[in-house]
Image (cartoon, rainbow, N blue to C red):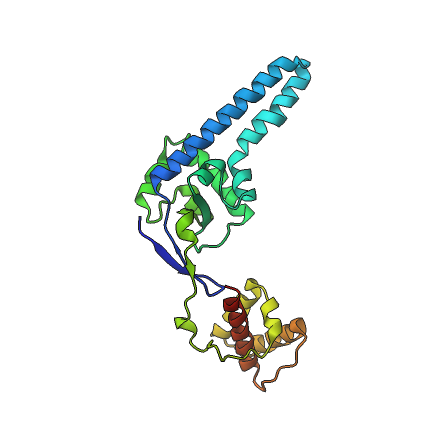
Length: 241
């Protein structure tokens, strides 16, 4: 399986390899075996309790049906993209850009699983075989992929694209380290914008960033101020690696 390389918004280069179809199938089989064991054990206990029929239905719904139904969604959401089967196989669900999927991404994968498998007779398997990163339809819709965890951990920083961030670089605004990736993306998009009212947007953004960081720009030029903030953020992001 071909390895893909991604440069994240935090300026970290991630090398990751998609999990093979075989690994994903084995992980799924492990999950089904564990689910089967859970159902068998719970039903056995339930049969010995001799509960009233009305309560038995509620117990079945709350303790067996719902946990089994939401198993993969809850496991992946609370275990950083891994069901128990995936954990044993050392594979994990991530966004295609290497980041952690959102709850909506996990939910979309879960909702589309019946279409990938039971309903269509395994159409998702065919799609996974035909796509570059072995993505089933749920992955394509959610923007996710399943990768080999060992390869995902091979992370290294690429400084080639940021040669100005040398060891002698002195940040001007240390507060830039507290900015979120979303805020940095807004600054980047604004600086790269080719709109007619770009200058007005830069002025508005400069004021917001100045208030957010509680700083007084040392540059006379608003655009240079935003560029400096962006570079300072990059500097601290690289330092954390």
